[in-house]
Image (tube, rainbow, N blue to C red):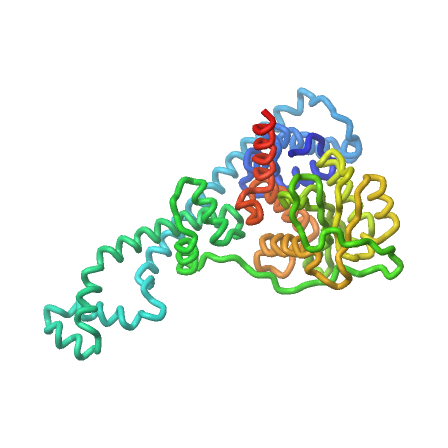
Length: 415
């Protein structure tokens, strides 16, 4: 379920995401974050008011009534943002048209690959059949005459398939771009079916290969799991079972690095619900102290309205084995679970989640640049992951939609 109260950190990240996204609208960003459009707009306007009022106003977090004289100054800014959004839309449309023109120019190469030579021979025979006898042409070029006639008879069918593939490729590219280049053929197929298309996943995969629509792989790793020899023993209550029958019963968490341009790192701690793989808590910092994982667990408790009676699973990192973290789990009435030392498979679901995050936010780059850019990208991805990104474990539904349907089904049964 969506959060009713939002932390100051969440609000600040939401405002920074809106102001750093070219051509952003309140509706598009609010949809990704899973919040109301007017809520985001109020956060942005309040942030601008605090900045224009000076440093003292930034420290004052009390809700303030907007002064009458500040309203006119915000209207020109809004008109400028609308014009910038329109320019961004026109530029995006121009890029789309350019891409479509490139696809059409390369259409002649569609029949390349392994059988290009044979098809070229058939084409040669067809182009010169008025100048030479077909039988002679086939003999010289060493092709079967009946196959040549069959190829010629199927020209219209091939052309129709080619046109259909081009149309499908355009739809696939729209879905692929909307996912920020993240979706492969299974998720693209699910999205197209939701849009009303009857399409086979094998065909989607073939068209994506033909038109070079693909994702980007990660390259390097940094060790973030450092066990604490003095930590008390915690049993493995998951036994590599990362599923749950109900939301809020089983959680899992881990830490991952976020590389910066200067060779340093930020670190991300996450808490995922095993039922829907929803990210219910996270924290980003420039350190890997216990506070990092503790803040993520506190956010999870705030998001879910409490964690009492649940199980939280992690690796044997020193942060998760510390006395402070154990005390926080006791306070929140959470039972701890840990996998074996040095075995990533015992926390594989979190490892896979972090790999997807970095693959889709870095998109082949070696780093995120500066810390502010890094935080904005990761924050945007995490919120969009919950509200819009399709997950294979959920039958290609977003975590939010998967939980919504689960709650709706329970209410129907109760009625």
